[in-house]
Image (cartoon, rainbow, N blue to C red; front, top):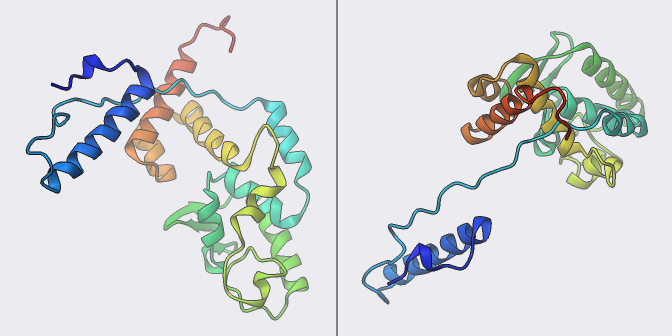
Length: 221
């Protein structure tokens, strides 16, 4: 009989192996090859993640310094201030960026626009109007290729400016969420509400923030 104790693997190797075996035996049972799935009652368990750490200030500063183009500055603000994923930034429509009412709608969630985002958004939109005055593209972020159509910019065009940096666009986005947990409370429901996080992700951020705040002052990373 198959036993979870008989496996020579531990940690993530054990977890991945059990998941693969459960899938394999489950398909065999569905096809009638076997009558009983020997792994059905074995608990895979949840993966234990390490404590998240905030980005180093110098890494953030380096990434901010090298981003100089108006479009890239807007992308950076959306990620670092509003924790917007690159996919959500690509899907953003002109109507979602309501500068007059200082509102941003990102992935269906309405957020107030801060002064920094308003500034870089105006800077980019002014450039956009001068460079492509006749474009019909409904996305605020366009380039010389997408200005001729109606599609979004590519994923690479968003992430390329920070490629190779210690603080990438995705890391800056995650750091913003972690900052929220540290500064505004350790409640996972708050994080889920502000950023639209799923339950497990919100709990992980809150758990890491609590561990960091409760760490003795003389602890080092």
